[in-house]
Length: 132
Image (cartoon, rainbow, N blue to C red; front, side, top):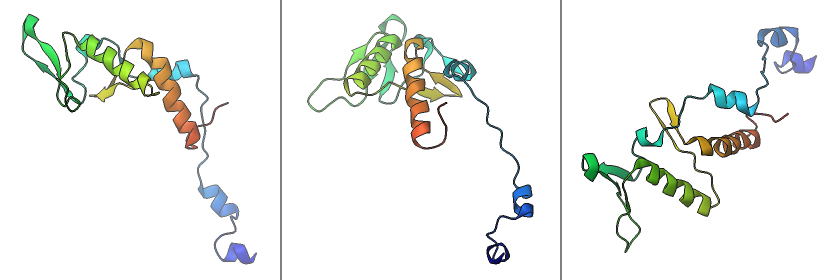
């Protein structure tokens, strides 16, 4: 009773004032289907550290800040840039997560499962989601 009088007792009024929470169970596939994914790498925006230089057939994707002592990397297609970014992440033991642009997640189809697994695992570790 003393705890209730001090405001920390959790009486019926306090319990009734908290709205119930309903948590929906979702499979990883359901989460994937609900995401605004963009899979066509050629239509992806420039990733951080890269820009499209030139026009038409002469256009090249150019690295803005190469490693010291190295020439900037250049690729003819956006898909090639995505391939190198995926490889670099894998070499560091990470998963390439792509980028969010205008509400769309720019990530190639083959990377979605690993990216989702990493993101969902992070949510579980932080206590923001629960694996069942």
